[in-house]
Length: 301
Image 1: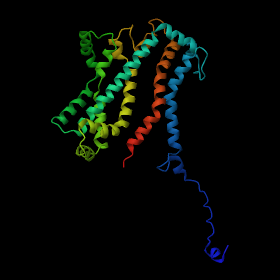
Image 2: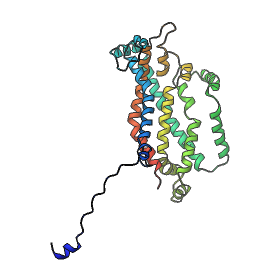
Image 3: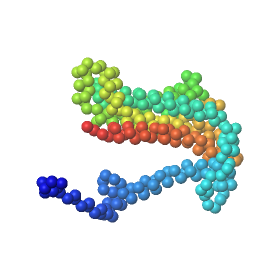
Image 4: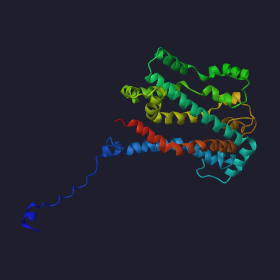
């Protein structure tokens, strides 16, 4: 090493000693990363939410004697497949599963499509009666669903649709909540200048919606689709009334597992677990896409 290099060379800085974060920051977090208290609350909520399903699976893998124990069982037994066979012998499970899949899928696609179109129209298009129509749509949410069941059943009987899955699908092809939800989302997420720029470039209304509104609405569409599928999958009252026992959905078929004199709760809970498995698979398959869509919609730039 030359003399100049020796004079200009600087010693490497000493490593800074690692200091422990304050107790308040470790418990509550520093604003960017959650602390122990946040993780503890999330773990408690998770255990409280997952325990009923776990308990149903445990009882479903045993017999009714497990309900009479002085302490709740924590490990599964060896009677699960026998209970599954009992469910298959008691109710038309595969028909009910097919009906639930078809009904939930068609309703979800329809609600997401029509709600996105209507929400975009109410949010970004200017026409007479925009505010009044939106108020009327929101006002329908204040009417209890039970009040419209009898008139709706009379309409379905007049059309001869009772006992058919179309009677469950058609009344819920679009929902007021879906329209309101998409409208509130699209009002702020799409700038008016972007729509005007697309129109100046020669795009018509449909092309503007397809290339401008639809990509921006995907996070809200994913959330609305997930909750719509869950609502249609777990719906019980209207399918029970309009569909007969020979053409049930999965939820109404499970009600046939109970008798007036004796109820085998192990078999009933086995059927409940079997009906919950498709929803869990849906969450596992669509969880990453849903979270990435929400994060994509939250980033502004």
